[in-house]
Image 1 (tube, rainbow, N blue to C red):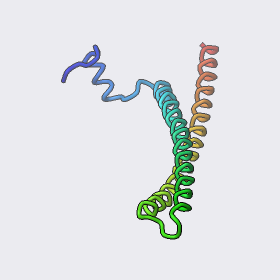
Image 2 (image 1 turned 120 degrees about the vertical axis):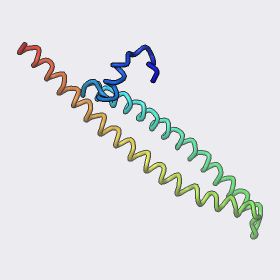
Image 3 (image 1 turned 180 degrees about the vertical axis):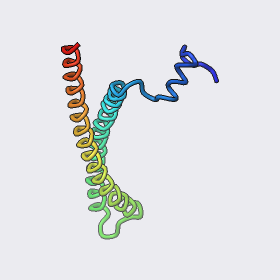
Image 4 (image 1 turned 135 degrees about the vertical axis):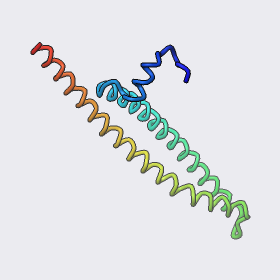
Length: 130
């Protein structure tokens, strides 16, 4: 087993035995990762809006093409209509999931902020008693 990134063998063994140094470090790591995932979720919302705009433009184009085609639509227009019918509920479900994800991240961010406040208060009380 090679020692990586300048760490000693004992440090690597301790990391295997104890995956986190302390609860404090664990919460800091989780809070940092939560921020990253929240940012990715926000980018997902922006991407969803862009896809929605493309879908609206596609629907307008599809409607114009069907008016020009007359009574019998072409195979391509039927395919486009089916594609539109499948994309619309998928996009709606995606929006619902992004909303639920944002609520989840907001709720857990608040909980971690409260934990951080409690930890700060406990550290201050510990300093006062020492």
